[in-house]
Image (cartoon, rainbow, N blue to C red; front, side, top):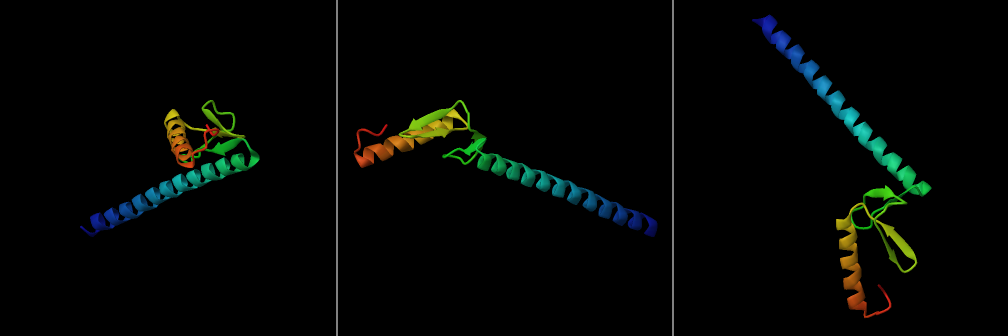
Length: 99
């Protein structure tokens, strides 16, 4: 009986060590991915979507030109949300030249 309890305890400890190791590897991979995105952003290869904060390639296909700035988006939904915000700001400011 004691052998069975001992084996169950050892099995539980091994299970916890294994799952904790997998969790640490996943966290490490996520941190590495974020560092790589930030490195690419500082190098100018990637830019941050102004709506959701996702990093997208600087030469992304979904873009909006606002005055002298060009904004890149991860999706058409983010682009539409930005245009909606831009339209409401234009309406509140009363500046007809801004579009």
